[in-house]
Length: 231
Ligand SMILES: *Cc1c(COP(=O)(O)O)cnc(C)c1O
Image 1 (tube, rainbow, N blue to C red):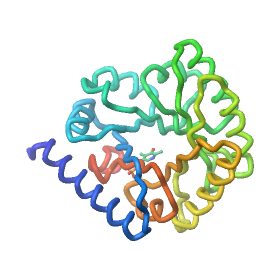
Image 2: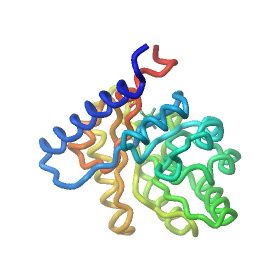
Image 3: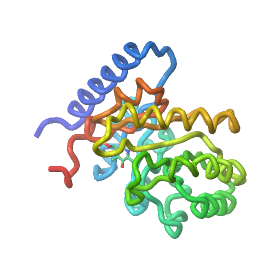
Image 4: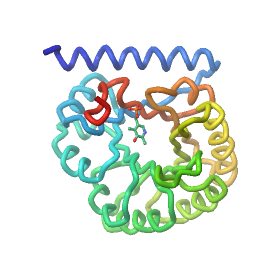
């Protein structure tokens, strides 16, 4: 068996090199935040990643958050981002364990998070997930309703509106889709100057996302390997 730490280290270096090269090509001197999506992989991998300097990880299922995150020893040094579809009745499971919910796509979910934040006396960072195709099954609010939802989140006490998030649509050029997301992010930022995050870009399309101004990348398989469902 190859040593998992070395394996993760090499993959992480390769992804950071891709990010640096894309930032140079885009002429960007700012920074992007790398969120390593650890879904389907054990808490021990999260510990290794934290040890290798990773400070942001992502998970997409409430149950997995509940099972894994309390077992992560370096938790204090990590920001945990929830990036999956979240049912209102699972909000209590994840709040307290995650720092950011990137996938807020309806007012009802924002209100449920607001109540959970109040119960815990702890603020939650939120991005509005935008659907860049018309496939509601993949989550996300329609672009034409995104500003309205951003206003709702901004009005919720205990929620901090950080910006927008999206997954590139299947079967469309990712860069074109991310350009639409950036326009929407800019529009929302006119009303909410602190909402500066544009979370876009995964293992296969992080270069396109960087070219279109992404501030947060969510990278899973390029670092951890293919997930069991993909093997
Ligand atoms: C799994 C996942 C990712 C990471 O995808 P990779 O292709 O493995 O990099 C990013 N964002 C979301 C919302 C995900 O569910």
